[in-house]
Length: 105
Figure 1 (cartoon, rainbow, N blue to C red):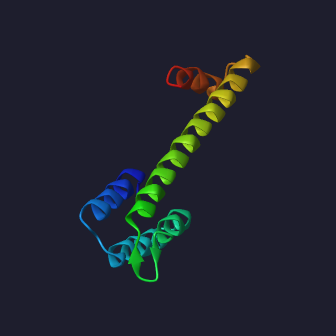
Figure 2: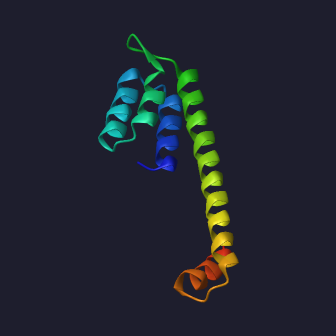
């Protein structure tokens, strides 16, 4: 499941007075797609069969913030690797690709 779909489902459950069963179904689907960290974070919003909507929304926000931070770190890592390739000065497939990639970073 991608991040946008997950956040939309969380908003739908929270906004439509969803119950704990809806959240547990979402958790099962996340586990099936091997997104266990997200599943654990969302599962914390259900305690003894009761859904805490505020915790669910907070879980969604935490997942969103972590995804943004991860994307930014990946962008910085890619930029550093591209610069390192360009510094070598060789003319080969990798440096030509790095020059093309540098325009988009």
